[in-house]
Length: 524
Image (cartoon, rainbow, N blue to C red; front, top):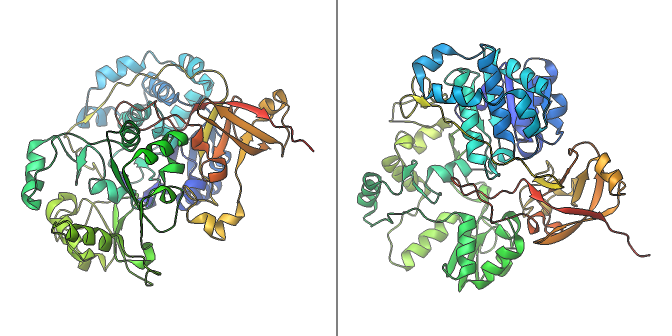
C-alpha cells in the first residue's frame, strides 16, 4: 500500500477494482461500507459480481471477467478527453505521458463497451467521479491479479493514479489488499522466486554480493520457480523434494488433480503446518508448527506496518515454532542460524534497508511503517510523497488481452465466514456460519438451464467436476457462476487451469475458467 488504512477513510472517492473487501478483508470492507452509507465517501466498484460493497456504491461497473485493462484505458480516455488530468503532476513527477495519451485515445468508451460489456455512459460517469475528486484512492485485490493480464491491470491502475495526481498525498494512493496475514512481510523478506530481501533482484550481481558477504554463502544467479512452476517441475521429475510451510496447495492451487499427481511424484515431501491439511496427508514427514499466538516475532501487514507478535500460550503437544523448527534443521545440516526472533529482527535491520531502523525496543511502543531508514526515522506512512523510487513515475502502455470468450465462466473467491482453504475456520465456530459450498447463478442462466434454488448442480470441464447446491440470485452476472474456494468436498480448484499464467508475475488465471453447468436429477 502506498498509504495507510486510515487514509482510505480520508479519500473523497474510493475506486475498488476486483475486490470483495466485505468478505475477504472484513475490517477494511466494513469501513468502506460505513463511509459510503454515511455519505462521507463516494464508492465506485469495478467487479463482475454484485458484492455487498457494490450495493453500497454510487456506481457499479460489471465488466466481463478479464477485461479490466480495456475498461481502465477507457476511463483514462475520458479523463484526457474532458480535461480532467492533473497536468502539473504529470509534468513534474512523470515521464512517458505522450505514449500513454496516444494509446488511450484509441480506447473510447464505445469501443470499451463492446469489449467489456460496460455501458459507455457508465464509463464516463466513473471517470468523472474519480478524476474530479480532490482526493481519490484505488484499491484492488486478487480479482485483478489472478488473471493472465493481471500485471497489466496493476500497471493501468498505477497509470490512472498518476494521470489524476492521486499519489503521494493523504487520502490518495494505490491499495493492493493483501490476501493473507504477513504475506507483505514474507515478500519483504524475499519469499519470491526472483527477489532477495528488500526487493533486490536475484540476477543483480551487486545485490547478490551484499547478501553473500552478510551470509557467507554463494547465491544462485538466476530466478527460481513460482509455485505453479514448482508443481509442474515436480510432475516432470525436475524437482525431487519439496518443503511446504503453512500452505495447502492441494486446495489453493489450480488443477487439483495435477497438483496431487505432482506431490505424489516427489521423492520426499515435508509439510510444516498447524493442522493435518489435505496437503499434509500426502507428506512423508509432517512437522507440527505453532500458531500465531504461540510464538514471538513480527508480522508486517497490508499497510507495511511492522508489528510485534508476543507468545500468549504455549504450543500444544509436540508443536514447535517455525523458527525453532528451521533452526533445528539448520543445526543438523551444519548451517549457522539465529535461534531467537529478536536476533532475526536485528539481522533483518542489518541487511534490508527498508527495515534498518526497526528494533524490538521501538516496536514495543507500536508498529512502524517501512521504510524506516535508521534508529531516528519515524517510518513512512505515505510513499512517493516527493519522488518515486525510480525518480519520475513511468507511464506504461498496456494493451488488453484478447476479448474474453463467450460461454459460462467460473468465478472463485472467499466468504466472510471462511478463510482460505478452511484449515482453521472449518474447525471453528465461525466456519459453522457457512459450512457448505454452493454455486451462485444468475436467474437468467438458471431459467435457461432449468435450475432452481436448492437444486444440485454439476460444474465440470476437462480437468474435473464438482457438485454443489444452487443459489439463484443476481450476484453473479449472466454468463458466469461463482463458487467459494474453501471446501475440500467441492474443491473449485479441481476445475481451474494451471497452464495459463501471467507472463510477468507467473500468476495462474484462477478467476476466469470456462466450465459447463447442468442440473443433477437425483434418483429417489
